Length: 106
Image (tube, rainbow, N blue to C red; front, side):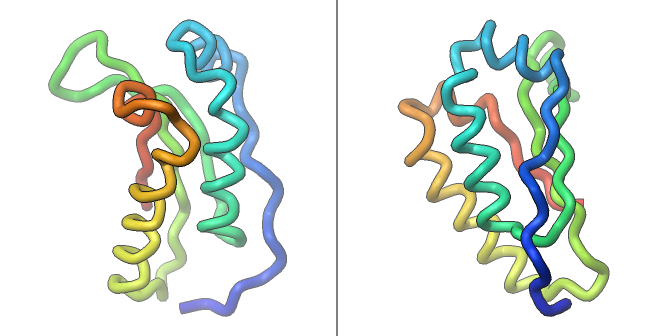
């Protein structure tokens, strides 16, 4: 896996993501979730966008898509994913809120 480099800035958040976060009552948690993602993935690009569930029409969430390097070690990716899953609850007060944030490693 590539050696860590300088941490990238927090990912940009579009107005539609901000509006959705506000509508869903998670706007106050968004900065902490983005900071957590950047801390877990300091040098990998992250895109933030809205995405509709493929199976449930009208069910939307905020996706944080992390661009994984080609030489990433699968075990390390699993470890980072579990870290995300554990820490998201430190930044959102309920499973309803945490469910509005999805992590994707691409």
